[in-house]
Structure formats: structure tokens, C-alpha cells
Length: 194
Image (cartoon, one colour):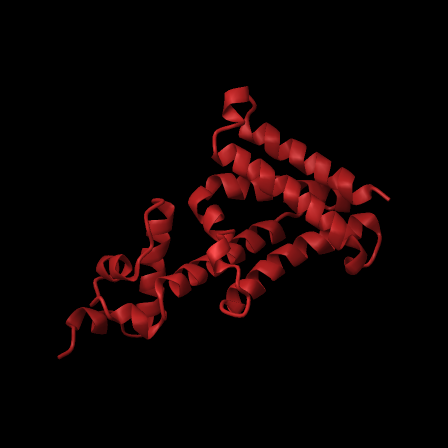
């Protein structure tokens, strides 16, 4: 017996499932295969054709999130390397704040197993690689030598995003944009340190 709603998605079933999953993430709702199937208008078993478990669906959504973050970082076009790195760091903070539930999914420790989620690991590494390259350019050193500074820069941006998302900064009366700009300036300074 065939479910007619599965047929309507034909080759786009995976895309429809991911779109339904993104909607759940954006709503900060639990991402389950059953709910994704319901929202996509397919049978409860249909998602298993593309995802072994809800964890694998969440990993695919996180992979898309890292790809979106990487695209935002690549979109920074300031001509001078230091200004470009500062704007990238500010863009990172803005992205995290604008996409809070997705940002939290990107760093969900249950998805950290690179062997279990290689595509997610690759997209996370690619996004981090953009930062490493930008730091190396400002520091005038090879990427391997810039990795430590890049981790410090990342930690600064990551911490700022979490403080903003959790409402701690708002209590101090500091604007999210002010935080993003300050993180950008600090990241550029970190990259220049010897």
C-alpha cells in the first residue's frame, strides 16, 4: 500500500523533510522524525528513507546551518584584511543571534561525533577554515600557525553569542550590535598579536 503524499514529493522528499526540520528548529521545537513527516505531509516511515534516526536528521540540519554560516562569512567583502576579519567576527555574532535555535544546534554535543556525522564535521571544519584563513592573512603566517589564534577568536565570538542569546548582555543595557562590533575589533587585535 502506497501513501499518495509520499509520491507528491518524489525526488524532493529529502528537501521537504529538511524544510520541515528547519521550521521546527526555527520555532525552537523538538525535531523528531514523526513531526517532520507530519509537517511534510508524508507517512511516519518516509523519513527513514533518508535519515536513520532523528539524530541524523538533526545532523543534516546542523550541516545546513554551518553551510549558511560559512556563506555569511564568505559574504564579507571589506578590502583590507584586518577590517575583513573584524567584519567576519561581527557577522558571526550577528548570525548566531539572528538564528539562535539553529546556532545552538550547530554546537549540540550529541552531534559532535565526527565518525558518525562526517558531512556535518566537514561543514563545521569548512566554516572554521574561513576564520583560520582570515586570521592567518592578518597575522601574516601559515594557517597552521594561526589555528591557536583562530580558536581564541572563535571562543570570543561563541561566548558573546551565548551571552546574548541567554539574555545576560541585555541586563547590562549593551546592544547586540555593540557587542558584535566589539568582538570584531577584539578578534582583529587577537590576530595581530605576536
